Image (cartoon, rainbow, N blue to C red; front, side):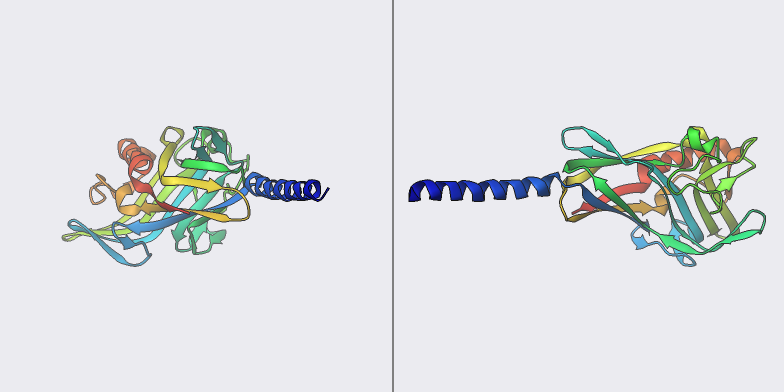
Length: 258
């Protein structure tokens, strides 16, 4: 009888332990995306000189929309994060709606994702900009999309559309000193970034995971002659396309996951 009770007790303990493990592994997880802005090997900062070749830059803004985040599992399955539209930025105050409103100076590099299905993940995808459904109709709102942050432009199309990325400040080369306004937008320039993790990331349970990314401003400007073309907008279509391609293939990288 004692043997039977012992067996039952052990079985009960094992069942409880397994159940707890199952509850932990099946619990959705939390993930923080940390977009660390840099300029080459230096930490990015406003009102600071950065040298690149023969040019010296000084910035008053670096802003971009991250949208439609997808986490890729080790087996290739994809989880689309719902309503994932976020404005990442380091910017001085921005005048909005012809001076009727001022968007305050802000620095934002962190995105918090909740209720991520448990599992092992190998990579991430995200859009830079806003896809046509919302870009063509600003009355539709989702996530953080808004017209009150100075990231819209009425001059690019017959209707107002979003500015996907914005770099502002000054550039000096020899005796040439230019005020730069380097932007991307328009539906054709909505790009997707796809990145692999340095190692797989297990998400689930009470642990908060972190995906550390680097956003290199110098890579955004790679191949762009900002002295010859200090303003990049819809009228500079070829340059804008090159800039958008830089964002999709050069600017972002994953430095670590944990």
